[in-house]
Image 1 (cartoon, rainbow, N blue to C red):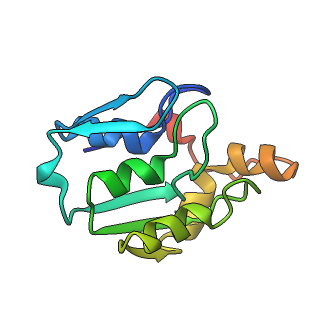
Image 2 (tube, rainbow, N blue to C red):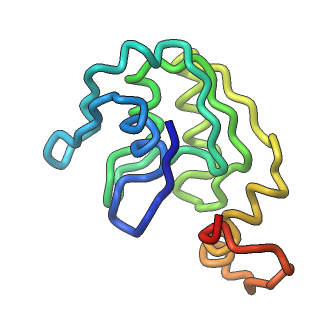
Length: 136
């Protein structure tokens, strides 16, 4: 399945991707994600540009949904620079026995997430002449 994060407060890309596979992923009140019909995801490989979140914010942690789906491997482009995530999502996945690879296509993933990185790190956003990921 495929997914993206359309707006602040909405589910993150991982949730949309799980749903795109046919899994039922719903929020339990203000708590965590509840998954059903996700047996087909057992031992699947998930590719993400940014480390799955590990905290309760406007949505529950994405890493918890991936653990509940029993995926076998997560390939992470870049670690999330947000101090409230910053490696914790990767750690929680690994603690759950999920194989995690970090740094695959890191430059491309950083470019895709440039706006988020600039916002979090307060670095200026520089145009590089590449097309916007929204244009794909």
